[in-house]
Image (tube, rainbow, N blue to C red; front, side):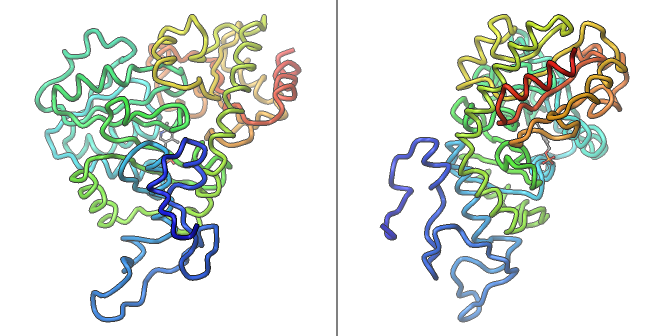
Amino acid sequence: MQSVNKKSIKMKFGTKAIHAGIKPDPATGAIMTPIYQTSTYAQTSPGKHKGYEYSRTHNPTRTALQENIAALENGKHGLCFASGMAATDAVMKLLKPGDEVLCCNDLYGGTYRIFTEIYQELGIRFNFVDMRDLTRISKHFNKNVKLVWVESPTNPMLNIIDIKGLAGVAKDWNALFVVDNTFATPYLQNPLNLGADVVMHSVTKYLSGHSDVVMGALVLNKDSLQEKLAFIQNSTGAIPGPMDCFLVLRGLKTLHVRMQRHCENGRRIAFFLKSHPKVENVYWPGFDEHPNHDIAKKQMKDFGGMVSFELVEDSIDEAIRLLEKFKLFALAESLGGVESLSGHPASMTHASVPREERLKSGLKDSLIRLSVGIEDVEDLIEDLERSLA
Ligand SMILES: *Cc1c(COP(=O)(O)O)cnc(C)c1O
């Protein structure tokens, strides 16, 4: 058993979540990957070591996690970072002044910020485009576009972008295609299989799953790109510590089970809200009438646990009144944990976006975003029902 090389076994998702990259500790046989809380490793002679020299470069707990996340995304290489933003930052360091980046127009706020406030200052140009319909996307490409960056589903409008369709165009133009797969997770969607070059994750969210770690990851196939990104990871040093890697390894073992429940509960809540007289629009890619429902059905296994909605009485005050009444949906930034959370983009994540701009992207004053947890859904619905009454 100990000698079995798990890499040689064909594993389905749930088995990979528990076994990929994990082997009994060679020193003791410990089944769980130990927390190698060490910065350095003894060498028998200068340069003679067991593959580990210094923990910025490699750490066995991190190696196990990187292999596990790579396996879940059907990728060859995984790299973990101190946060999702650090993972994004590493990708941006592949670019040079004069390069252009084509992005979808409703990006995670922190991604928008690093692009416009840091990398634009360094001479990289960004073009933010509505990518829900790709029929005219080619006109946004030119030979300077070196990177295409999208999220699907997007935050907080739950828009869906055709990843396979966009991958084809990006390839024609020789642009590196990155998908932030944080909302979908590898359980629901595998962008590398759809033609993406790199998958980025805020591991902080569903992968960790317990709201107790901040971490990021990249997964990719190409060896030459892996060499460059591993060089950046080691040179700039935004790596996660072994304790956090251990916590995420523990969280990942239940990713498939958690996601099933997130999806079930998300579905129940989306339909509940849709039938409520005080609720105007509900945004959830599982509805037949969602504009890109067919694409969502094709590229995702299910529709996830994120649901956004607007109130009939569309005002910031009305939304705040409702949010203050919730007892189970804690009002907080972040998402993807086992516990349900609520958020108000207009006054929280998107407060810095001018109202006109916000409305243009369809984000109304009363829009509320729910990260539906894995509690008993009847209790969640009762919390919503009581608060809406
Ligand atoms: C949270 C988040 C990020 C940033 O990740 P951090 O771990 O907070 O640095 C990036 N993209 C999406 C979609 C996110 O939700």
